[in-house]
Length: 393
Length: 245
Ligand SMILES: Cc1ncc(C[n+]2csc(CCOP(=O)(O)OP(=O)(O)O)c2C)c(N)n1
Ligand code: SF4
Image (cartoon, rainbow over all chains, first blue to last red; front, side, top):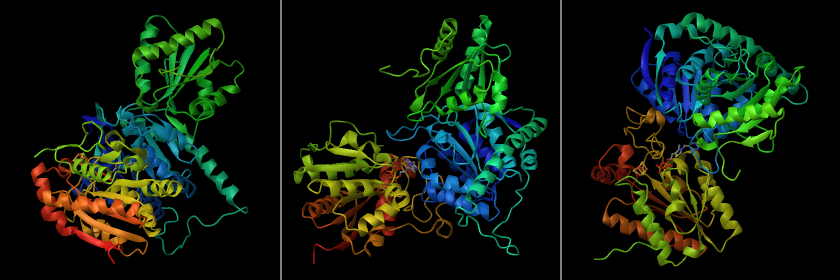
């Protein structure tokens, strides 16, 4: 039976892991994702899952163990944040290029230094080129739902790529919200069994994984990986459709919130979208034509669909919760790419917010819409790139 | 009897839990630095772990290191500024898990630094997960039924492990779980700093330390846990001392 529960974001991810019942989980604790593995350790201890839990000595070892177990044919999961994922860096690329559909809960946290345990997206954005599918969540329910879909997406034979399910540290991971945990059996059926591909266990068909690959084939392998990433887009759409049929909640590659006839649009990722919806509603009541485009799937990035969704609007504010030092924000770069080929391009600019957990309140977000109104009235963008709520500006 | 606080410690209340061993270890290190009159020369590395705010408490130069990377940073600092006195202050997660490679190689190279190793048999800061030093049968959030040697291996004894390395000068395991132990611990810490001043090479003092919060024991029972159980798994004593021969 599905049940409504009041639960933390981390608790919800642990529930998803319990229902997915992976063969192996390898992890090393780091705030704010630690509780995912702690809750899961209880499930292992209580015999609620059949998982081999490996409490390794670092994240680098955690991802190495995940890759080994996945190459051996197992379904494998882990959870981490920030510096923990940074220490996995080498292995993130290897997991992806060896086409191991490892599943990760990434609880977004700011990168050191200075040390900071609070939310921004510097960790996952830094890993955007590693070859992982990246799916982001506004709230608890979405994070859980994304994780239930993750194995079906990553293990699809046309895809075979690792999947990172991202949610905001503390804002979601540690806050309690009421959400629906689906029926164990139904989730289990939805997720299905992982079909091993060239498993190390298949001794009748010996294989080598990750062999040397120089000028002769490396570029073809990279291209193959990229093709899998492109195919992932329609697979994600199919899986989301199946998910909606089974569980009733409908997800697209991104969410269009009151975009129809919107003139001023904010593009954002993760929990701030919840607040933005409220602000959009309020401004709409006052007759302002505003809307929100919330990114769900960041890799593969749905350029064409987004350009269609934003076609016709007059000004777009892209809110990045991370910096790409020496460049505009990572999300801004993608949105400009998406919009460039439109004949009638909207005005476009970038605002960085919330680094290291700096909060954005509803009034702050209203200010963002006010600025876009001023820009639109003046017919030009004064500052393409700027920070929101920062000292010394 | 009067009690004065070491001038090497800042006038700042610590964030440590009641009954935690870190505060005692801080005091010992601070008093030794004061007695050796080296404060102006000391550079410390702060770990990632409960002692992450070391720089709020010690009145000396401090660099914050990524989790486990103190020995590598300390090596570099000492090599650039051999006239300074460099110490790392690390927990068992920092030193014996994520930073184990640095620990072993720094010791093996015989770097002339002082390592203060706080062994509280748990990852304190992240809320009580199993550490490499967690005892067999000891419960943690990632070993809810107790550590099982078959699955997680037995606890790692750092002093014994490092004692086989030729580069190492001095290794001693002490405790802060009784007045007598604290006096012994201070002697060991003093020796570890003196060795560095005299250019004698790598010294590590392992301090068995209480973590009432994550052990889910009262401060009093935590002291008992160190005295009865930890000391059995981690016998106190000198494991190597090249200066005595
Ligand atoms: C790369 C990386 N992985 C994980 C963490 C999370 N983390 C912070 S403190 C800690 C454990 C500290 O335990 P220990 O070294 O034993 O020190 P204690 O807190 O017990 O004093 C961990 C795993 C981190 N900060 N960086
Ligand atoms: S959690 Fe443990 S080690 Fe950390 S301050 Fe509290 S008692 Fe000390």
